[in-house]
Every structure is written in C-alpha cells, then in structure tokens.
Length: 108
Image (tube, rainbow, N blue to C red; front, side, top):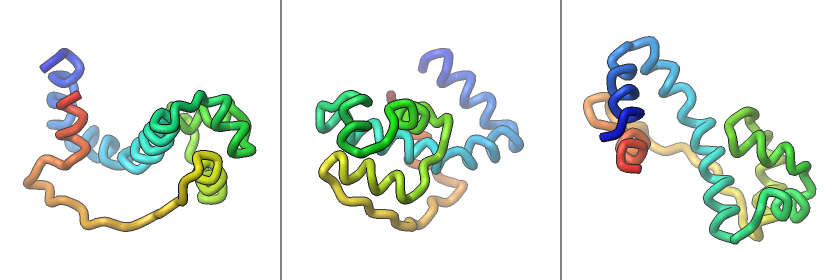
C-alpha cells in the first residue's frame, strides 16, 4: 500500500470525509468513463473534441472532474466515439462491504 492509499484509508475513517468522498463517486465515474472510452479508441482529447463537436477544453475539464457534463454533452461525446450512451441505476453495495470503487482505487 502506498502513501496515498494509507492516507485515504485514514481519512475515510472520518465520517464527514467519507460522506464527501462518496458524494463525489458519480463525478469520478463520468470522468473515468470518458477517459476510458477515449483511450480505447486511441484518441486524443483534441480528436475526441473534433469528432464530438465540443471544445477540447471542455473534454479536459470533464476528464479532470473540474466540470460535470450535461446528458446532451455526454451524448455528443458518445457519438464522437462511435458509441451509444446508456445511463442506468444500479443497486448500491451495503456499507458493510468495501465498495467496488474503493477496491479498484486501492488496487491501482
């Protein structure tokens, strides 16, 4: 476990921090989804922006989590990637279990 992982585990013991961390999960998932899809296609941010009809600076802000895109913008990005956009609600894991995002974060 590296220093970040140790610090995160310690911080997550604070209920206030944990609440804020969990509240940011959706933003993280949006950012991660855009980055993953772009990299799978071997595209740069500039190429994705051009194919999607959105500004490259917006792609960057979405990927860094600086801004949340609208559903319309996500649709444009999906089309620019040659993908469709699916939004779904999934059951939340219980607080007793480590969440999938936390496991993944700690792994790598």
